[in-house]
Image (tube, rainbow, N blue to C red; front, top):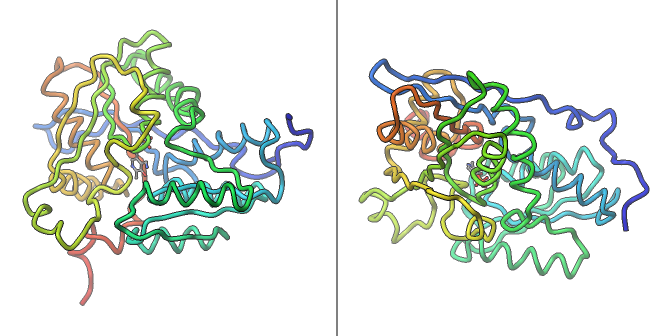
Length: 316
Ligand code: PMP
């Protein structure tokens, strides 16, 4: 039944999230120019603010949540941070189910916004977290946002991010779109939104591959070096229609180096931005020199201070 109570976002800033900038980045004269959507400038520091707000507003309108309801999500971090902030603004309670081993910064931020955290063992991974979130949905009557299958996730990018990009690129035309996939919401929604507006955009999947060094580490560590980008888990992605998708493999070491180079140039990004940028630079080799290539910088660097991205700066 649709809710009769108005959405509790009047006078709260998530009501008026500004478009994020799209900037042309060329790290050196030898490298291609890539149009990068600075999604780390969203209020919680990641692109996930868009899906958090969209999924919750839709659920509110449908009468599935109201003030005081509990929301639950299984996420490796960014979505949980975005939901924790959105729930704080909308008078909702929030539980994040996280696999052990996510960076401490993520835990601190979620708790600071008043969110609760339940951990599942690291080995259970995001699948284990999803199972536990389902249990919480039943036990507590919580609203499970289900980012891996909720169509409002790509929809939020189709109606907001894609439209912003179309207004920001020269001539309103995009030739190629490059993104890593967690839920797939970004790649699917942007591809849909841009195609519908008449851009024959070619999708490229940025795929992190493990360096040999990482294979050696694997026996004692399950952690991915590119948090947020997970393979083969998303129902949204499995069922997506992405014709002519081209996979671009990027060694994880190269992705981290790209993130560090971007930070040096003043873009405060996390590892997945390095992955996307490195993949876009490789995609450029398959495209005409004047192609308009768009990618996304999904989140901010501060949530990775305790990770290897910053290990060389640690004061001992
Ligand atoms: N980068 C980061 C940091 C993320 O958290 C995510 C999503 N979990 C992605 C990239 C991938 O985005 P999407 O879920 O839209 O595929």
